[in-house]
Length: 422
View (cartoon, rainbow, N blue to C red):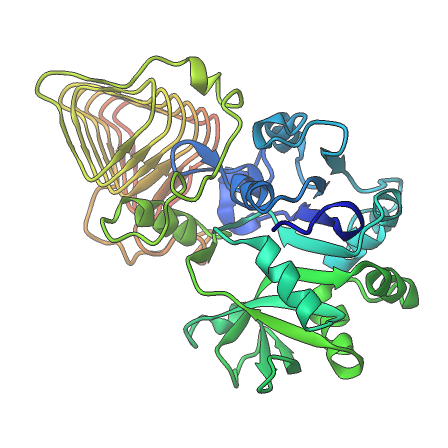
């Protein structure tokens, strides 16, 4: 039974304002949660669909960095059934003024600036989510866990590999599941239990906490550690697929996960919805067309694609055209890209409306360990990144870990060596 009605209603705040700089030029004109994923979705679709599938109906989306693409995608919330007298999605931008301090300074500060939204929607609890994670979760079960424990705060946590846990807040729990110690992004971790950035707060407790000290601007760094010392904070155990796709490598890997036969990720099976009108009215596009003699294996091909050449282990968004003699391998290709006759794309991410010219090659050479010279922490495993509306001229050659900026034109017969940017 869904108890999340009337006086038991839980209000959702979805944090979608981060810069996401590690996604490089994919976030040059869009917020990180608006980055396309899995051929048909945006990253934020997963959190929104989890909210919808958990029976929650009041959502505030806290935006900040380049929000227009995200706002166009969300619209009225109709795609996720958030329209009606008791339902709604409210865009909550920062109260920007002349000073930098008017912008959100951290996760807790973002919520603090929107206390009026919480007061306008009375609730028993506040559920705080991030808009940049790929996962499926019954949020109602987490809320019930929070109530059963009579917790002030509940933090969703999962076990991760020790070599990756330095990226997360970590918690040590007692036999009852109460968090007794906390370390934010530890260099020398003492546990493999990591925070997922998902919190349930009793509303009254959250409002009182945020009013104490305005210098406490972040949940992981300030609010949660102090709450552990003074109040009842519990860890809600999560077992399932979850990935923070805040890097080029993680975004590529998560897309590849969808293609695996033994994949733990299934957007369709999870009931993930998107807005079909965002990318050129996907719902109105004709079915994908596969020409005689084309070769497709282990790939996801969206509506409106035309495949005349070869596609192997790749994710193609709507409207991608792969001409005869062309090849796409181990790549993620966004909406309305053209891979011209005889062109080769190997281990790359192509943003929207990229044109790869006749007989051009993206991803040439065996030196996948040659990191990008300007962004060595962004591209280091061989993936090349081609920005929105870029044109790669006929017979061009682009190496590994290369970056081509949005709107760039690489003249025919040009060469961009591995690790370089244009």
